[in-house]
Image (cartoon, rainbow, N blue to C red):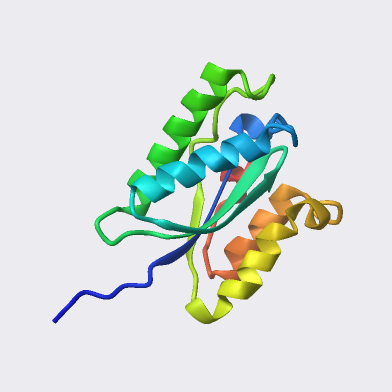
Length: 148
């Protein structure tokens, strides 16, 4: 029997102290770098987007890779690239934690549209409220003191 997987994850993480440092003009280079990293790890990127203080990544994760190691690699490689290329002036790094949520394949298109519309979405809601909403929708218990 062959191995078949569909390991879809919605990954979210923010800049250190949520400093709004990811300027719009540098984001395409950051997104391309993350896409390349995912491709090299045999992951399929469905969508990436973000605003000044956080990113959303929707990807298939190859079954030989743990989600935590993938996110660690994304953060380390992208942080290094940002600093080496001086891509964002006020970038101090990424926050320590992250959110990673499994996604049902039937919800794929809806999530892609949600991530595509991040700029418009964040005119109405800030990151902290969005993140709390996502945690609650996914049944994740959290301590608010760790969200700051």
